[in-house]
Structures are given as C-alpha cells and as structure tokens.
Length: 617
Image (cartoon, rainbow, N blue to C red):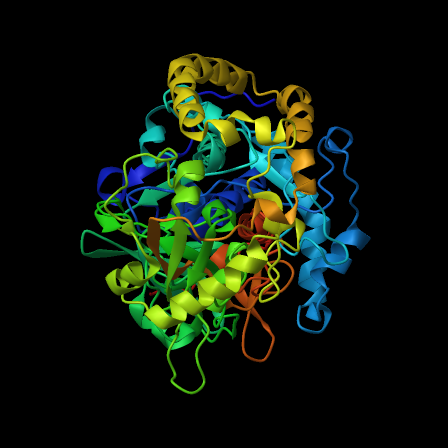
C-alpha cells in the first residue's frame, strides 16, 4: 500500500509557468505509459528525472485506451480465473506461426521474464491495482494461447494528484453494442471520486512519479538531441518559440509514441496516411527523426497496431476529429463488411489488428488499398436486437447511418457496386442461416465468438433476446441511478489501495459470468442479412499507433546501424521499434511492451555511470 499524499516533490506544468532544469540525470521524451513508467523507475533508482511532453495533457495513447496490459504468467488470481499459464506456454504462443524465425529472442525473453515483475512493481509503488479477467488472446486457437493474460486497471482515486489531475485527460467511451463484461454498470460513474481504464493507469504513474521527484513539462516538444560524438547527452525542447537545452548526464529515453498523426511519415513508411485518427494528436514521428539524426537503426517501421475506425459527426478531441475504435459491433450476427465492390474481404469478427491490416493491404495490380474504406452492412434484425455505439436497440436512427428499403437502394446511397453487394449477400445468407461461413470461417475461433450474441444462462428467454430495447433502457436507467453511489464506493475502495482485496471480491464473480461465453456457438456471430430495411456504416482503416522506431537491445538501449549501443540513448513503447514487431498478443499487448521496456530503460539509464557533459549544444 502506497501513501497517496498530495505532497509532491516533483512538479508539472509548462516551461513558461515553472521553468525547466538545465541538467538532469535522465530526460524522457513523451508521457504515455512507457514514458511515465520509465520516469518512475528511474526516480526510484535515485535519478533526477524530467519528462517533456509536446501536448498540453499527459498520457498519450495510453490515456484514451482501456489501460489493459497483456502479461503472460502474471500470477494474479489464477485460482479464481481457473486458468493455467507459464513461460513455456507463452513462448509457444509468441513464437508460433513462424515468428520464432522473425523475432529477436533476447527481447522476447526479457519481456516474458520482466512482465510479471513490472506488473507488481506498479502495484507496489503506486496507488493502483490490476484486475485480471477472462479475455481470449488474439490468436486464440493456436498452440500456447490463453484466456487469462489480460490485466485491466482497477479503480484509482485521483485525490493523490491534487491540482495535477487537470493534466490527465478524462476517459473516453466507445459505446460498444455488446461486451461480455458488465461494463454497462459503469455507465453512470463520474470522474470526481474515481478513475478507470487508461486514465487510472496514467494518473497512478504520474502521481507516483511526482511523489518521487519527477518533473513534467507539458507543451514542450523535443526538437533535437544533444550529442558528443556518438553519445547522446541531452535534448533540446521548444516552448513558446524559445529553445531550451536540457542536458542529461545518464541518458535520454524516447517514449513519444509512434508516427500515426503525421501524413508525411505514414506515407513514407506505410504507403499512405491513415483514413481516420483513433489516437490523440502529437504522434508525429519525432522519435524516428531524432533517432535517425544520431545514426540509430530503425526497425518495424512498416507495421502498425492496426484498428478499424469510425468517425462520428462532431466527435473530436482537443479540436481535432477523433474516431471511435470499431470492436464488438463487427462480430454480431446479421451483418457483413464489404468494400466498394460490394465484396466481403475478411472475417469480420477478427481481432482488430488483423482486420485492420487486411484493410490496409495494397492491390498489386492497381497500387491502391481497396479495403481501406469499407462498410458495415446490417439489417433490421441487427438494429432491433443490438443498436450501435450506445444507441439502444431499435432506437432513433442516427444521421451517420445510411438506411434504405432494399440492398440495391442502399448500394446506390453509399456508392458501392450494386451487383457485387447483391451477389455477396446471396452467397452469405444461406450459409449464415446455418451458422456457417465457408468463405472466411467467421466464428471458428474463441475470440471470434467472444463478442457475439450469446446468453448462456437464459438463452432465448433472456431479456436481451425477448425485450432488447426495453432491457437496454432499463440498464441505462439503472446505471444512471446507481452511478453516484458506485462512484463514491469505488472512490473509497481506490483510496484504501488494497488491490488484493479488490481482486478477492471481483475476479471470481466476473470469471463466472464470462467463462460460459467461451462456449458460444457460431450462431452467436452469424446470421443472414435479409430483413428490410437495411443499414450501412462507413468504416476506415486506422491504427492505435505505429510499431516502428529505433532498434533496441533487451535493456531498451538504442542501437546504431552496425548493431552497437548508442551511449545515452534509449527507446520504449511505440517510439521504440516493438520487440514483437507487428504481433499483437492480446488485450493490452501494446501497453505491456511500453511498461516493460520503459521500466528496463529507466532502470538502466538511472544506473548508468554519470557522464561528464561536453560544453555547447
């Protein structure tokens, strides 16, 4: 248990407000999960630490995520989960499908051995706890896969942050139509007493860092590194048009995220900009630029953590359109996804990284990405059973949905080939009516069916089946009514900072709720699209973040093109050339890499011998 006090030795604010030190031990570029983890670890080692963040708020992509971490063999509540896991099982999973010949085994082994240690380090040194749950790995049916490796943030009280709480972005919501976890109960919860998801993780790491003397400067983008020969000795930041050199006697850690926000850099490495943005502004590839300028080798720049996205009218974040991630809606029956030819191009229920990658595939003959803009096509049965994005089943149809009485009319409205769409539906429906998909095998895996329409306890007598609209409305009212009570209770629980107690209460019941879903039939994700009227939703290829950056060793140290360590330069998270390249193990697979290698980089940098700095910039 950590003393969550508002008395902080560190500081957070702009350079104009607080100034910036001329010299520190460790300078960290970026304030997402990887950067804040590196900062806390280095400070715990006794280092003087500065975090510089280009935006006005901290947290990066971690801050708008679910905050989950994918940690094999984590050891939390395994008896309640009724799962078994070990490093050999995790190795078979990660190295499967030929990845043993592609991945750097030293990095993978470091991740596997250090992951559980980092998860416990966070609990020990912050006012934060993990809640494990049943959640299938994203390659759920290959050797070594598990259903118990995802750790989600428990409730966190922002009271310990004091005024620093204003620098953390509040949680966002996707309004997912169907989720096996009873998230609907949290629909009325506020943010005054308790934080959940990504803000909980970011808030806890920030609070702990400030308590241990970390200084954070916002609106302070890095512009170049300070070097002495091959060694990196600091970073220059810009604030209000003025450059400020910050020398670092032990190292600089690049943790500034990927380059998905930059049209130029995404065009260079990924072939084209992303259709929509699902991550915050500011991920412009500065880590790639800075690393290249000092001769670092790059790796993984052709990959991203792919994600289909949906831009709803008027939805934005800090003045820029921000799209919703497109998750469980795709797996529900009575729906398909098609491209402009009206053709299905993938199993719609695939994990988002796999479907998103298919959407970005380039046609070798035309040089275009034919699936980059796609359409979710569904019928009235879908609408009356599920609704979408928080709109209740059978509710008022929002403006962002196209609607028509026939598929031919719908095709004309959205500019999709009519003959192709009719042919696709004619092919899909007879098989889907019998819960089959010979074209793309939708429903074959545990993960495919995880978000499907399955009600294991009451079956066809479930209120969700018999009275979907009324049930959704009742849940909304219940969530709103109990929201203030739940908020206060969760806040009290969070202040007690006893994650073992929280897990003893929650993990077992949640596992009993979710485990039967693992036996969902294929009919939970397959059903014909045959009841008028018909609907269409535009879906664009996007990414949670990019993968590529400076190549590192197992301690997070950046390497040059000859494989030698660049003294004083580290990288972690989406800025650091992901150790698993484009392989996304499961829920929280990106955040866990950032936390683990941020921790390793912070520790190694803090322990690195103090370097006599050269004069000049």
